[in-house]
Image (cartoon, rainbow, N blue to C red; front, top):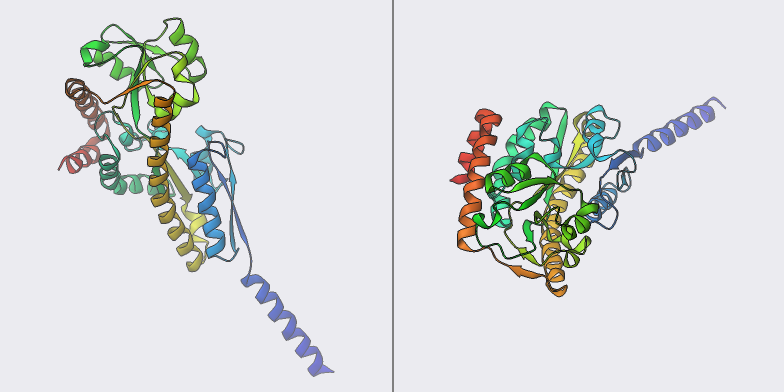
Length: 324
């Protein structure tokens, strides 16, 4: 009987240990955008890849459209461990550290190739900043490039003088000021009325926003200036990541690499689809003239120099590396 009891006890311990080995970790991942957005779809695939690679031992639940935490709260939630992983528009944190705003310096990295070069140069500085906050960068994906919308043809920076320029952040306000335009704060839902009533004449935003707001109803021209490609970043709480097994950590890193590659391609596809949609809606889609490109590049140089002065040695070194 004693031997039977011992055998039973060993069996129970084995079952318990086996169950512990299959313990499941669950992460909540807040994101700011709706399910249909290509960033959110990419995050959902990332979570599915992690689930598959870990055989279900790590589950990542996507909370889209700010349903768990509002956009400005997501990074703080990840730092505190309330949500171990999250996604934000990188430049949203620019007021915390200048390095977060480097991707949105206007007319510095125009087009996907330049944006990728800027990201490769910026990445170590971005990782360093996140690390100092107890976070680890997993992947970054750009939005489609920002273009110039107007109710007339714009062939040079001089054509912008005196026009009411829609702004929604300090950088765009600075662009307007340097172009001799009149900065005018307008939110996205108010764009059709603002253009129709003459409260605003020009704006910088993506082809996606133009399609979403039916720009053909209130303006006529889209200049594909590819002013900058703002990025979303996905990061994880370092302490939460450290608790994962080595195999789980590898699964997360591998899935993140795949998400970054997939996301850049999805962004390019989004740009092509939405630019075609603008053309189909009878908006005149133009490439910027050489004179306009030169004038915008000069504005970009001024704003980049102002940013570097705030960013200090790291910022200046980063821009020097990018310009090589």
